[in-house]
Amino acid sequence: MHLSLINSARHIVLIVHENPDADSLGSACAFYSYLLRTHKKITLFCSSESINQNLAFLPWFDKLTNRFSDDADLLISFDCSSVERLGIKSSLNLINIDHHRSNNNFGTINLVNLNAISTTEVVYDFFVANDIKINGKMALSLYAGLMDDSKCFSAPICNAKTFLMAHELIVLGADHALCIEWMMRRRSLASVRLRGRLLKEMQLFSEGALALFEVSTHHLEQSGASLGECKRVLEEALELRTVRAALLRVEHPLGGVKISLRTDGTVDASHIMSHFGGGGHASRAGARIETDSQTLFDEMIRMITKELV
Image (tube, rainbow, N blue to C red; front, side, top):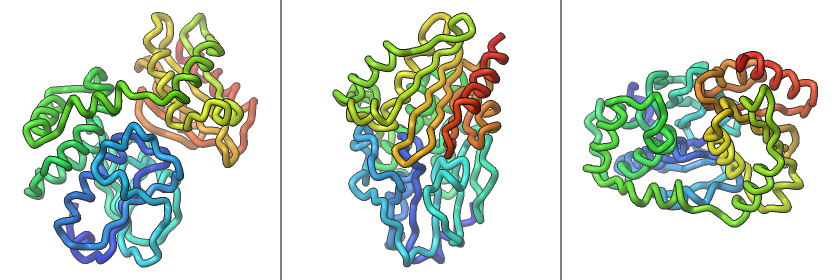
């Protein structure tokens, strides 16, 4: 990636996607640390008002804002597979850093590596290629994203480079135990309450191969859980012996629905979600549907069950 846009910018806005995960926010936090050395004005932006508090251990978490700056002259997005994921509309120059194969290269400059396990891997490679020193805060941020998108180094896509990167980041100051504690063990009371309801109301299709979860705005209000906290139950469903795909439909407080699909690789989640305006990875993908339609959702279930036969 050519550095001229960064070098010439005065105010850079780092954008993480709506309801950010550790990969998106970790990538942005690592870049925030790097840009501090350039003595430029930096804004860490997310359009979501509520951020998963399990990510509060990341450096610069307290710098997040949902107010977009009028005087910005460069945007850098992290882990956003489409321009809609930015949560804003802007004509400014944009550096698009990502690893989703559904990314359509919407940036002025696109640093998209489809072979990377996480966006933090793309950022790490950028730092290494440009001889940018990685300090402890950067190492922790990058490691959190790597651990998140690799499912704590259990995903089939993990390879020798994944573990080599993890090793290098720990040497540079990443705290593995801290990441485990915050990302894997800490849960809010609201999320535990919602998890119990979701597991109780789980529906099974295709002889138990597809698990379906539906969350209404009433469920969210009653439990106090956030949109991001709903997804954890999908991974748990895939641990069931018969389940090969888990689908979640969440009513969005602002209208429409958020769809999340997790699979064991049998079904291409990204391919399915692309039919509904979404995207992602082969085993993890999602879509935002502005108008909730039972017919549309039934078609989605039909497509998934067809692949499970």
